[in-house]
Figure 1: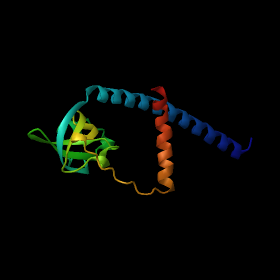
Figure 2: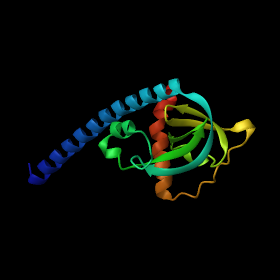
Figure 3: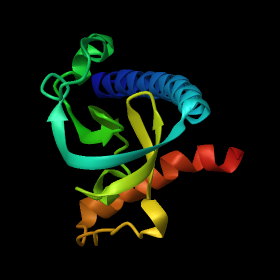
Figure 4: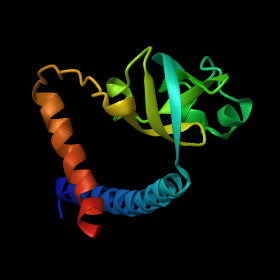
Length: 161
């Protein structure tokens, strides 16, 4: 065998091993995410709140409890989260919002929200109000490709239901 064929064989074996490892790690992470989603769905409660402000902030700057910061993995501590400042009853709270509904949350309006702990899962308008949905700007080829990847990635969990 030539040196080139040996090198190509070794590279192929390494790539196959890496793909297999990624497959099994991905399956395990998907199971963990599904379990967490089930826990959130089980513990969500309806709450009426007045949205004061919303922005994407780092966890340290968001004013969340120290326990939240400590329980966050180190590689995610510097990422930005969608934070909503809302008045719930007499208290003003900082809540973490789901990425999917962050853009549809109206500012300085009263809404009915499904909340699980400090996590806003779903938002509805109060008294039949329609929530204004912003028009999405046109996506480029990379954005369309990423949408397709996300759609294919979530198709496995949709088929089981």
